[in-house]
Amino acid sequence: MKQLGVLDLPYPSDSRSDSGLALASVSLALRRLRAAVSVPALFSDATALICQVVGFERAVLFSLRGHALIAESAYALSGTPAAGRASIQPRADSFELGPWLRESEVLRQRRATLVKDAANDPRALGMLPGTHSYVIAPLVCQSRAVGLIHADRGSAGGLATELDRDTLSAFAEGFGCAVERALLAERLRTHSKRLLELMRSTEASVTELSKLEMELPGSTEEEAAAGGGGRVPALEPQTDLTRREVEVLVMLADGETNGRIAERLVVSEGTVKTHVKHILRKLGVHNRSQAVSRYFRDAADREHRLTADSS
Image (tube, rainbow, N blue to C red; front, side):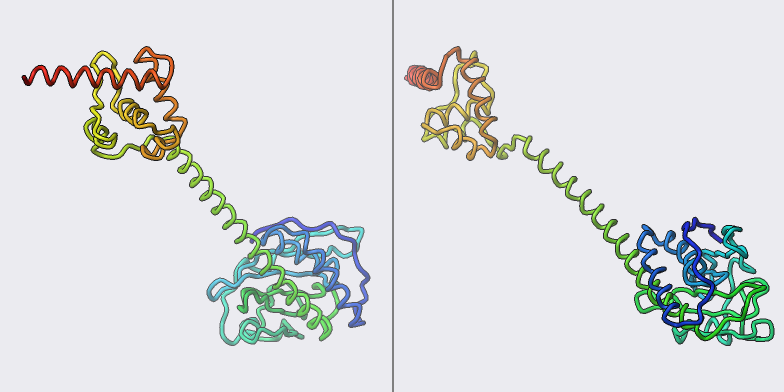
């Protein structure tokens, strides 16, 4: 059985004869449960609150797993307020259920019951050691019975009553709602974390793509010339311009702006500016006009040589 921490709460009055006072103690206990931040913390706090606020001497909470009850949290008052608090071990950490048992009936009907004579009742498991009478309440979460709460007046205490049954039933109903809320909160935190990770991954991918200089497949100097109104893009070999720089120069000769060149080459405008800077440096010119003039002069010289060679 898991031993969990408990709340440091003041001891209530021992009197629970008045049903209004009993319901008020249940309301107080459920409000105290709001401090729990997880399902295990809820389980631990619940048994402490059943004893310290609702008024029982001992309490144990079981979860239902298959056809067995598994002890999750237990708590007991140690006689007097000055003695402090003490944990208690059930008779076993797990109990196999049979269809004839009162615990199975509570799970099936989802209704609390009072076991008046645990020692002589063959249908009672009597999970708390030395118990004389006790109450059982179902823990219902999302319309399913998922566990049980046992509580009594202690092995040396008084007998449990119908008021105890109704009081524990009211607490169990509110506790089931608290467990549902905690489960939903945990799911929301998990989904929010996954969504945040997905958004970060997507942002990283977009950032990486924006840094890539995408080139159209099959782009050649001759194709660039075709897109430049038929001009011959090739310059003299000594210029050392790259294929992309030649494309940019051809578009400059066509009168295109940096923004328009960026759209045609599917790159950023900053990348076009970098290409232009490299073109000016390699051609040994100072501005775009001089680069375009150099382009036309080299193209004309090349055309003249081609004509001379063919004649």
